[in-house]
Length: 117
Image (cartoon, rainbow, N blue to C red; front, side, top):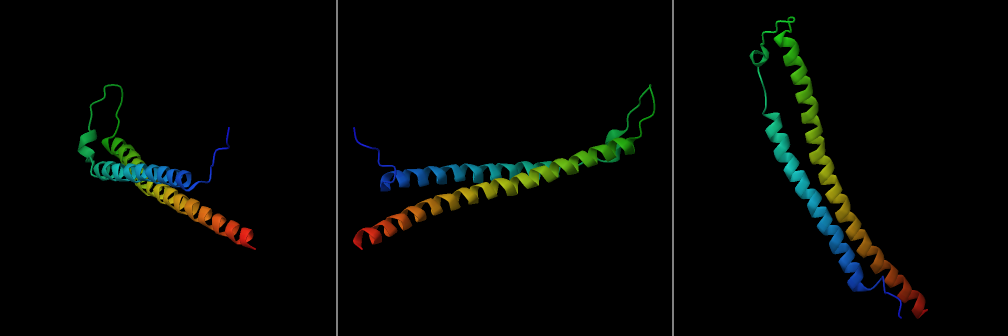
C-alpha cells in the first residue's frame, strides 16, 4: 500500500477550490442578509399603530411605540452587521485559499532549491 500524496497539485487544487466554493456561500449569505436588512429597515409604524384599549390599565401608545422602535433599531443593527460579517467570512476564505496555494508553491520551490544544492 502506498502513502497518499497529500501535497499533490491535484489535492492542493481541490482543497483550494473547496475553500473558494465555501467562500461563495458566505457571499451569498451576505447578499441575502442585504435583502433582509433593507426590507426590515423599511418596516416602520407610527405611534397610532400602538393605540389600544386595555381594560386592565392604561398602556400609553408612546411607550409601546418606543419599545417597538428600540427593538426595530436593535434588529436592524444586527442585520446590517450580518451583511458585513458574512462578507468578511467570504473574503477571509478566499484569502485562505490563495495563501494555501501560495504556501504550497513556496514549499515546492524551497524543496527544489534544497534538493538542487
